Length: 124
Length: 130
Image (cartoon, rainbow over all chains, first blue to last red; front, side, top):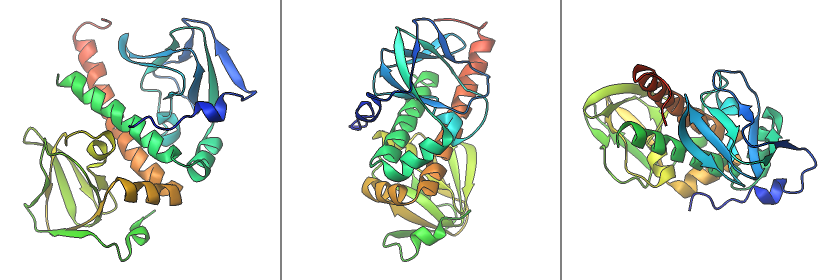
């Protein structure tokens, strides 16, 4: 119920997709960053000090924390398979919050679900 | 940056005295709260974790994720809370991107805190493991 929104519809035909080969580092833990990404094709791996937190597939987002509360990157994201991503900067993000129906709830749902998973990791 | 104006004439306001419980760890969640005035302490397994004051939000994670509350919230003094269900949260955040960012920032700050905890524990366990 939390993933009702289809971001692929918005980004599938974007002409600004970036391709990463399997294994490539997309976001490095501890780095500064000001972009979030929508996975348009393939899968990415979110990890913390080598521990797998999540595999995110097409339609999913990663890196959104950097646009919400600027700080160093809290996790590493690598390409699990060859993949294509759409990068979203601060201005586009805020514009989407204002203009794309369901987008803000979608981002909040993603954050809440990650938080719930993180709690489960520390208290199985 | 306040959001009180969003809650002018809000139809569902809950008033509590100091010591009263807003929600308890393990409760199911169908609403979250915006703190109009007062202070709320969040406890986890009985231990005080943080205090949220006027303008803060509580209970959003469980509401959004359809899960049970991860902690207990207790009013520290006379406190007034605006109750929001999912539909009201959706309306407010879609009408007001700044409020959406406010709720997101709170989720993000929790997530960073828990990630930092996990990260520190992985360090203590000798680093990388799968």
